[in-house]
Image 1 (cartoon, protein in one colour):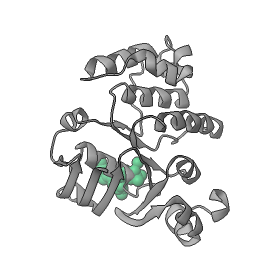
Image 2 (cartoon, helix red, strand yellow):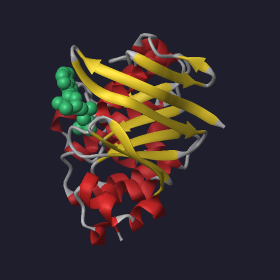
Image 3 (cartoon, helix red, strand yellow):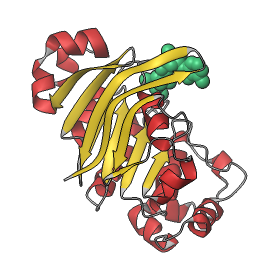
Amino acid sequence: MTVLELDDIDTYYGNSHVLHGVSLDLDEGEVVALLGRNGAGKTTTMRSIMGVTPPRRGTITYRGEDVAGLPPNEINARGISLVPEDRRVFPTLTVHENLVLAHKLAADPRPVEEMYDLFPVLDELRRSRAQNMSGGEQQMLAVARALVQRPSTLLLDEPTEGLAPVIVDDLREMLQDVVDQDVTVLLSEQNVSFAFDLATRCYVIDTGSIVYEGSIEELQERDDLLERYLAVSPEEVA
Ligand SMILES: Nc1ncnc2c1ncn2[C@@H]1O[C@H](COP(=O)(O)OP(=O)(O)O)[C@@H](O)[C@H]1O
Ligand SMILES: [Mg+2]
């Protein structure tokens, strides 16, 4: 069943036309990757879905309802949560305070303790202030904070950005547990091998247009696309 469908959306920043007829859909429980280089339009796609930068044209349908044009809090209330690329955890609050705050603001939250079961690292860091934690730990906190809201759809915007390779490995393992849960995920990434490990299907975006849609296996065979749009050599993702 289709949960989220973008149909031919155009999104602008002022006069700057950034997304050109983007269409994509997510089925219930799927993990779909949105791949593309820096500036390709991944974040703008996420912002369009959340209503932060609503599309000027086209439709966004969530569980049968046209949500394009709704304010972000309304879209969030319908079950879509975004983990933004800059993470935006509250730096001076502890892990626990960040999670309790998210819990308080959610309509139907999951118990905070469930997040500690899911992320044992955060359990150990309960009393640490976010600003004193590593980028990877802050990313885990950002994901946990989104999951507390019991989203049915999670938008993860470049979770590996700026993380050391060893931390990316931890994050991959942890996200594997998250995606095994009952949640539909749109994962934007430049780190192609990371996305390939988690997703089953993908879109490639370039200069605001979708240039590929299909299975990971198919894309792995498309050396031309990998090199042209993702700037990776085929060996890197074999
Ligand atoms: N706030 C903004 N105002 C104007 N242009 C922007 C803004 N944010 C992004 N852009 C432009 O939109 C395009 C897509 O950016 P973005 O969606 O952030 O790409 P990605 O997330 O794939 O790196 C880029 O050309 C970028 O310069
Ligand atoms: Mg981005």
